[in-house]
Length: 115
Figure 1: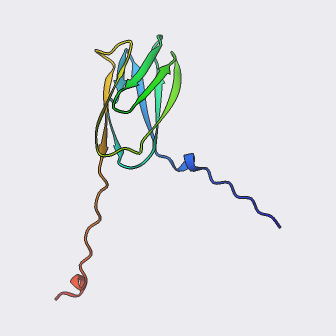
Figure 2: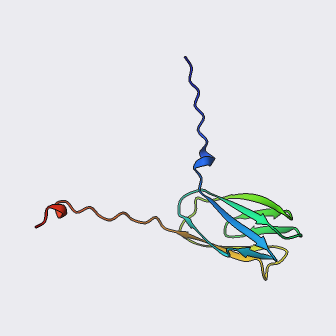
Figure 3: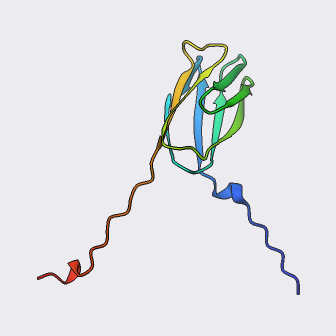
């Protein structure tokens, strides 16, 4: 008997949502984990086209009116990564904040047995 298993890697990918409305990104600040590839879904609710642009992320994506677009980013080192709308750069601005991996609490042997 032959058993075929398909593993969908993208199902495991963390997803973050951003809305573009009135030439503004909501939220304008997004926190994502370090060293992980993530899916960024942008919902352009405006009646006009926009372009997601980020020099620090090395990404460009046309955002068509009244449609959702997907951009994959990462894995990224901790830091701040600015993005903006190319057609409205003074208002459509945001930042992705990549936080470092939280360190687990150190395990101290014998601590549970202390009197």
